[in-house]
Structures are given as C-alpha cells and as structure tokens.
Image (cartoon, rainbow, N blue to C red):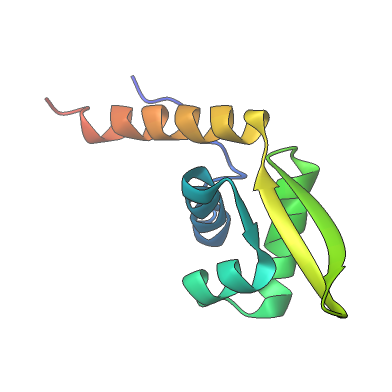
Length: 96
C-alpha cells in the first residue's frame, strides 16, 4: 500500500530545488538560493547531491565578468519527481 519515497527528494531543500526547476526548467544558483532561503553552502551541497543522482545538470559560466551557476532539471529528474509525487499521494489516500 505504501510505496517507498525517494530518499534524494525526501530532503526538504532538495525537494524545493526540484520543485522550482520543474516549473522553470533552468535557474541560476542565486535565484534558487533566494527562493529557498537557504545558505549558499547548504544549497551547494544539496545541488551536488541532486547532480550526483542525475536529477539536475549544473553548468558554470561567466556573465558580465561574474561567475554564474545554472541548474537545469534532467529527464531523469522529472521522472523521479513525478514518481515521488505519485508515491506521496499513496500516503495521503491510504485511509480512504
């Protein structure tokens, strides 16, 4: 009846990052940091975990002589998020 929840996405901050990227597909590190109210260090660690899982791609470049980090959700990340939401719904409808 209860399905396993993806431990990568079950972290509040990682889930917030994926949820943001589902809507915008690609976002700058600073945008994600502002939207999640996370510290730069914590966000960096969580983004690395999502990258290692294959859920997002991270690219670094320069924009107007300033470093810019872009995060983009991958097809694997979209699938993982959809599966997570579906499995979470099984918990919400268990008593019905």
